[in-house]
Length: 92
Ligand SMILES: [Zn+2]
Picture 1 (spheres, helix red, strand yellow):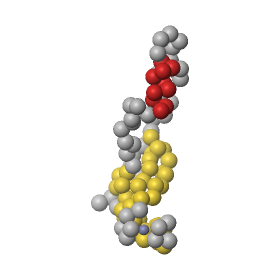
Picture 2 (cartoon, protein in one colour; picture 1 turned 45 degrees about the horizontal axis):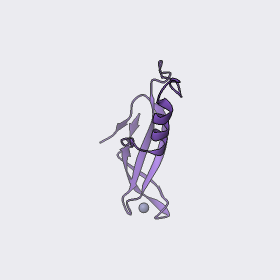
Picture 3 (cartoon, helix red, strand yellow; picture 1 turned 120 degrees about the horizontal axis):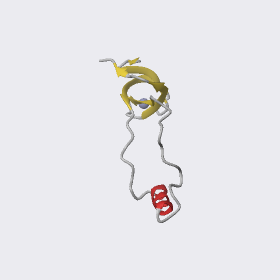
Picture 4 (cartoon, protein in one colour; picture 1 turned 90 degrees about the horizontal axis):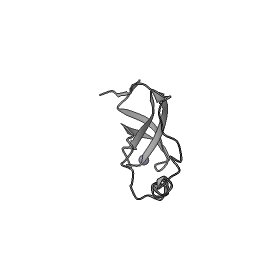
């Protein structure tokens, strides 16, 4: 899917339609000492196997795409979900 470089859409901070810069969302690096990660490590210790099962066969071949729209007037970022797409390109 082709996505335009700029989208004119509603900004909740400016409370009107403004021009937004489009970029793709990328997940940040997971924290090693987050609460959930510490719990998982505790469950994995010793005997008893993998608590949530090991992923052996991937069912999905695509990832869900999130667009980050940055308001050009105030800089507020708004997310927009596109769902599962095989290929996304931002038009230059
Ligand atoms: Zn704005």
